[in-house]
Length: 347
Image 1 (cartoon, rainbow, N blue to C red):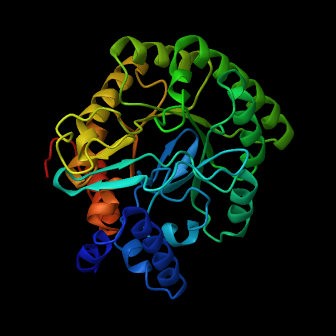
Image 2 (cartoon, helix red, strand yellow):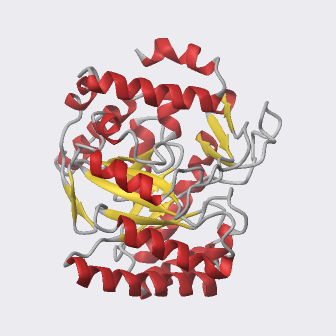
């Protein structure tokens, strides 16, 4: 069905199509017409971060920033869903247009700028959702919060979402909030992780429940930066790392329509960079901390490539724009079949 609808959706402004698709999915889910996709997903549970995931294919943050479509997205067969990025206070994000498709390259450029209704609105939506799967919540800082006070914003969000999240992702890698990526630098990252893990310890005692923390990083890092991040993840007991966010590089797309737009590039053009970071992190972490692979997954083969590079779980986003919801079941089936195949056999 999605293949028939895609030309009409692609005729619309990208952000308008995004909003229309989510609202339509919500309506179809309420009518009981989305569950067919979930039935095709073969269950293959695995435990990562101390969490039991029914399958290893998740939804990346950014699609449902406010947690308004949890039930509808949950019906697509994901093993986990990540909502956000959410900030302490509501903010409109950057001016429109701010979302651009690059069909020739199977890519998307966005400069959304953490547009969201604020953490209180997200918590209200999570409370109202009926889906009871693995829910990650992605947190960030407001655009006008100075970098030296970024920890305050992350702590404020962590406190609000802690009782409702299966895990919390700390987003320091969006290119669309000024200077945010500077938090990936050694001294700033150490201060941030130190403060967040201290707050997590206090919250775990208060709620008698330890919620895992994940860190989401950029693909635009050199080997030395990746090694430093790996060391700090282990030093502060971070439970997972998500690799990667969007790229600011424009390799191979600069001459395309919209290819020179500012923002983060996702989809097929980021696949190789993201997979490289997954592989580099997996080697540096030596199995001590799981890696969640995201970036350019458009097929079962792409998902397997991330797993073979060292990822324990994968996440989808831009692939859904081009391939539709059937991509979820395709990736789940491939990863589950591989996990259950006897040693020495091939597909």
